[in-house]
Length: 459
Image (cartoon, rainbow, N blue to C red; front, side, top):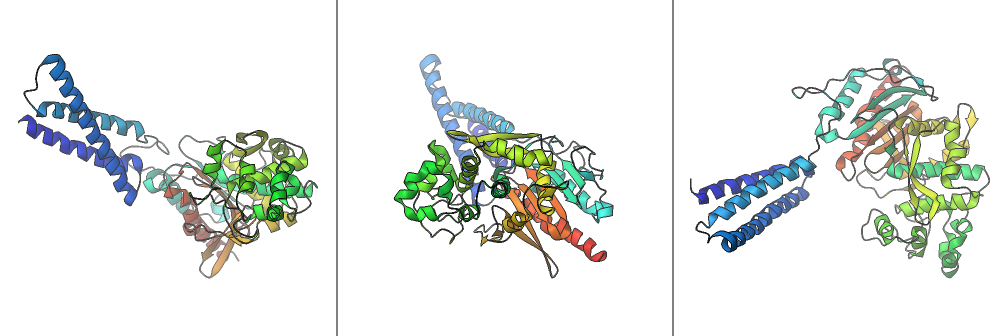
């Protein structure tokens, strides 16, 4: 076979490998798939061209004139194919949710959760109306179905008992999970505690009362001085800050990259709506609430959370991972175990008490999880919003089961469904992927209908 024919064969092989790499390592769909393919082909083609030029120069200058024009192209094509294969192997996800035979799918068998002295009772699935066959379907989906991969944990709690507890990808009962924006609901709890302890007067207090370091901003722009704690709790500050709009000057990523005082930058933004008028998702607004708690209480936020919340719940295994630039006393992201995240849900199911101790007032539990506004999140069906708590409703037949959630990027969810006395915890690493809303689909299509049927059957 001539070098020309060999070059054609190897080029076709190179293009085929680039095409195969797209679904293997990028997991994209739609137009992005074609953009990724174009990028891979460009890398391959550019590599062939550059290597061909390099080989031609080296051979011409150091050895002998090129007698066969296709030889360096053939060598370059083979080299780039090896490079693209190595590139694919480097980025390919070889992790498995749970070990099982490569020649068959994983098969799940229900087992009781781990018994520990951490404040949780343990229950059995069947006694709580939870179908083991339905559980088998859900758990096996997390392991066998690529559309449900990278799920780290699934914990189901009913009637104050841990009924289901499943971990994946070597995560365990003690593994800490990055909660991302589920942290916002923890801030909501801390605001309620701050009011109960007398550090805040009420949610109607202007945020300016507790952020004296920005008095110059509020003085120079009086309408901003009308922004209250409640406006920040409901994401209705009126400031030009929208994390869901990349063009927004107050988008969190823009402020993070600036390296300056994020909260000062937030309140320096233009007021584009009257406070309390329009929902606009702002992570920096929630961080401002944390800074206000620190200023009002005189305690670092991690100490405040420990003394007034975590110690009462018996939460000891946790880690603060991010702190506000220039304010190390204002941490804004924490990692918790799935069980301990579930405790926050149980705290609210029990109207602010844990093991007979009132931690946050029942009035705050009701007010913070009530509907105060409607979100602009189209993917989730424009759910309602409380005080940094999401509100999703699950309809089964003609019955609507109201719930509230803490939720964060990547698939971090804490569902609380009072009427079913149920809590569900999901954590995963599906950051930036459509899979991150899989827990919501599972609750809507699997878990709530199952529990609702049991409720009807025993009513």
